[in-house]
Length: 268
Ligand SMILES: [Zn+2]
Image 1 (cartoon, rainbow, N blue to C red):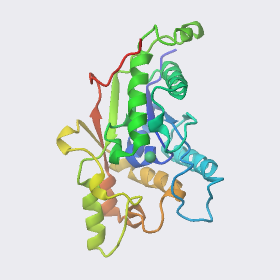
Image 2 (image 1 turned 30 degrees about the vertical axis):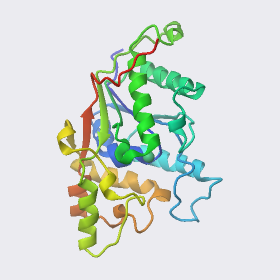
Image 3 (image 1 turned 180 degrees about the vertical axis):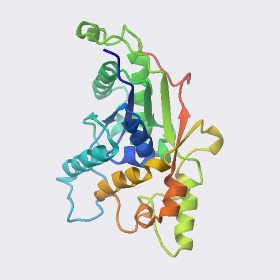
Image 4 (image 1 turned 90 degrees about the vertical axis):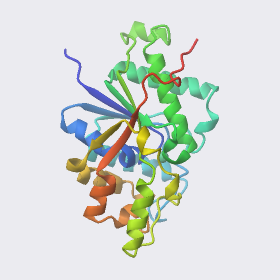
């Protein structure tokens, strides 16, 4: 049987996939690729936009359902969680928890055999420690998945080593979100982006190596973002986007090719 082209996205929280790569995921699904998602946490300690939607006993479950709805919108046909703790991922390197997560990620890579893997850029989009950590874990998992000596028990399950041809780090160009907030301010809206200073987002534009025009899939991206209702309150910038602003500021997705980085650690 011919292997189906597969794109695997690996992010930290439900909503990361829609914010940073939703249009790309929708575009590849529309081309007939299988699109898959590993989400490290359920975002159970994240903000709650409206008390009627969740509390801190239910937020993880509610966000799991929000993610299911977003996957449906984006055409993501396979997904799993790593069951890591929201906000706790920076403490994981060197622990058994890291070994457990890597084993699951390597197994997934060997099962799905993706041509493209997308994760967070080392900047973590705005320095979020969970985002930085999942980018590092994914980079390590890709390096381990291609080494037949690592988790060699997979071989007995007919899961041979797999080299991911293209590992892409998702981010935005610096200034992108700052300009968006300024444009909304000019239009009379006082808005925010999850309460994070907009100048903290992204990397210098010159470091971006791949820009995907997702304007034909913008409606799907916006619909997927709206699935994450607990994360977008009514003063969030995305709540106030006109069509023009959405096209201009969310109509492209940005990546840096990660191949041949020193970050590609190998495990002994
Ligand atoms: Zn996140």
